[in-house]
Amino acid sequence: MSSYDISTGKIDASVIGGKLNRSAIAHTPILDDKNSEFWGYEGELVVLKNSGILCLVLEYISQDDKDTIENLKNSSKIMYLSSFVGKDE
Image 1 (cartoon, rainbow, N blue to C red):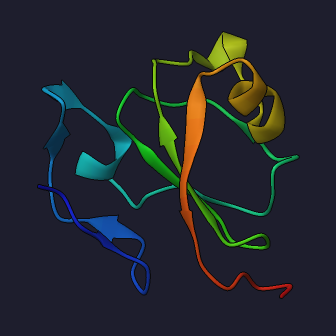
Image 2 (cartoon, rainbow, N blue to C red):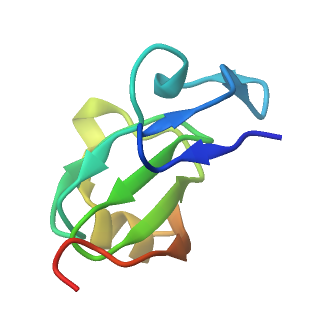
Image 3 (cartoon, rainbow, N blue to C red):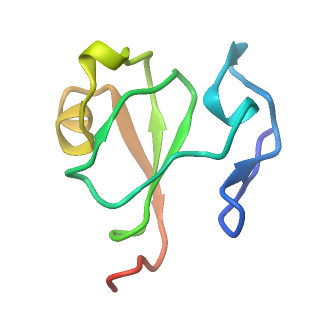
């Protein structure tokens, strides 16, 4: 099971669901809010720092198909997992 360390932005696993993700190579993406554009890999976690939301990417989103977090959530490509006290709260 992977665990997310909010203080460092790292996940302690290199593979989630059998698919290599960005967190295996670099830090988990930390975006400002739901209006930020994003593309990513299935199984990847994304942090929205202003609103305090942790998101899970449900399917691969290519760079050509990048969109705002809000639109990706509405199209069921990502889901919100949990929330914490964000920067603006």
